[in-house]
Length: 300
Image (cartoon, rainbow, N blue to C red; front, side, top):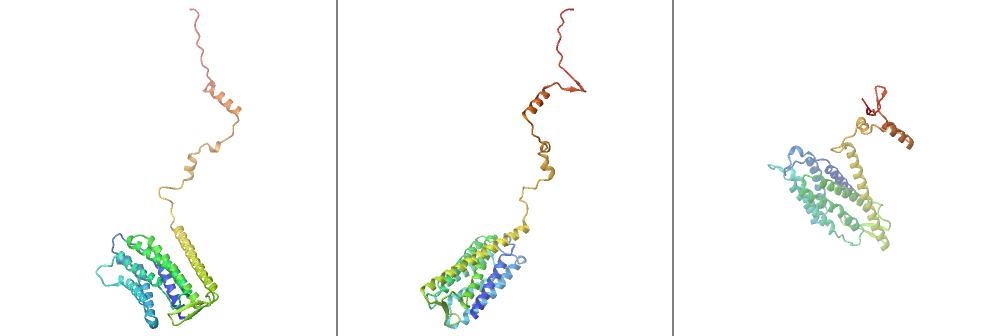
């Protein structure tokens, strides 16, 4: 159960970080961030500092399985979290903070990419391999944010990567340390940090790997649905008519169609009679006028 609690706390913390990351943050065009706009930034860094400190403490308490890459990654995340609170004359530029965070994500990527427990055939390796997907997304989004510090898209992509990483860590905790593990496999723990999940047969091993892949696809689909729903909710609250277009009023709509209310169907005979009537002499003051035929006098 301690392993389940650790994974759950880490996953929920990453979800909270993703929520704070997706909040709107007004960034001025200057490379320095004024302190009057840095309240969401400081709150995010405080939560990241707490999670980094807990991870660093957990790595230090694992005396029998002390991992230098784990310590390095935790120290980089802690340094990034505490950097905005340094007593400097001016705040650190946002690109510099993003580069420091990118280094921390790169160290985390190397940590899980080269993780090899005591038993190389453990099912947990498949879960850690799938964890590389959201970490890579966070790394790429952070590098893009360092290149374009004022844009919102890299921050939203990083928030999506943190959310997927958080939900997947919660799933790993339940898959490793509860009865939700795949059928035919069992946890074998040498210590709190040194464990593996062994399966009885080769078929059980492949079935467990397939279950892990299906679980990850489910988490990814859930994230896409939640993101689309959140985007639709925000768009419905802030939607406005496109610039340069306006709705036509009733008077404007009827102005261009004055003859629609008097539209009738005429036959060919009625059209012929109307043509003859139009060609007839006009009526002036109620008396029909005719063209005078000139008379030529025959004599005087």
